[in-house]
Image: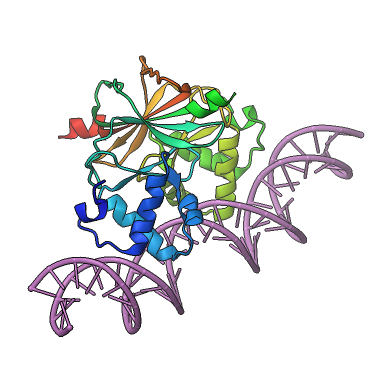
Length: 135
Length: 135
DNA sequence: TAATATTTGCAACAATGTTGCAATAAAAAT
DNA sequence: ATTTTTATTGCAACATTGTTGCAAATATTA
């Protein structure tokens, strides 16, 4: 268990540790609303600033899916604000509404004539593991 | 040139025609801000409602890319609010900032063990056609 | 433990999006 | 073509989301 805050040269405050703990609790990506619900007591402004700096330092990444409010998840590999080294697909379950990051071995590739592709982001939706089993 | 509004059983009002004309003018996807700038005179609330109903009727679709505000573009094929028949990739140029829909013949496929994928959305970023040529 | 740097919370504000309702305009029916 | 019906618009008011300056509090460094 490494110290994510110190690694990214961020001061270790109780609030940041608490937010980080929430991220670690979830295996899925979570929206602001979930973080707010899980914090016993929090300041809206501080939370915004915390999320912002976590994003800037590449501690977490943002997942925007069409029609959804933004979700956030811990970065698994060493990322910065702009460069992310993920090889995963963002998956939204249409049944339980969970958004998660799914690691894939063979990440699809794509070539477009006349375009130079630098990054690919894949958002899938369907039925997740636990919903498939639960039926 | 079909009548998109009538096709979708929407009243043909001057305002809706104007908004539709703006969408037709652009080959790219556009954010709210661009629509607002292009409208000579408009009511904020009516615009929100217009976008909402255009989305509901499948006249336009929303494109959410990480870090971006939402973009909107006309649907090319016959779509509804939930089901879109696009075979295109959303492309964001990191140079000119344009977001566009790029039709592809071979749309990548993806299989995930334990997941049932129903829809795939692909967001690419890099350098677009005109920026590549302009250099 | 003191000095310095960073973070927090407040107040105030800006931007974005929503709702009820009366006036208005479009579509359907006569 | 004119009336009736239905849908849209704009206003006021509000809800939500996100931002900024600044002083107090806290964390880090020396």
